[in-house]
Image 1 (cartoon, helix red, strand yellow):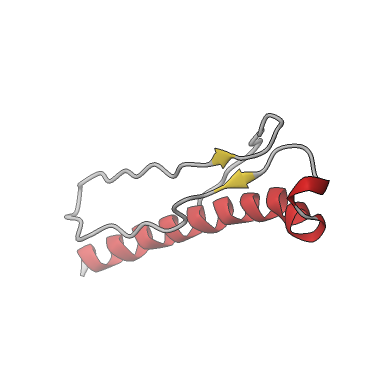
Image 2: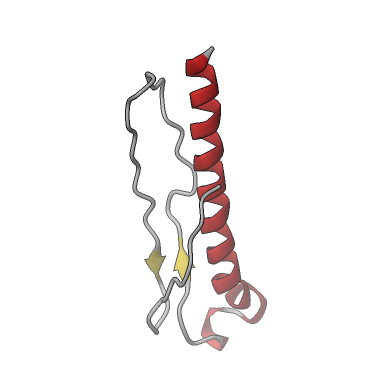
Length: 85
């Protein structure tokens, strides 16, 4: 029962992190979708992998995963705040 609760909590953290990163990408990339890539200058966030699901994790184990954010724009991409729930 404890393992299931920990997996649920871990899954919630991963989902919240994924949603936060997707929100950043959407906010920074939405102008490109509306105006076209040639019409917009500045940063453009791209997430090649927006979801990662951990396999079974034993209680007490630490798990890590790096989400990569690429800047495909022509200006520096500044990420001011990231939160996981």
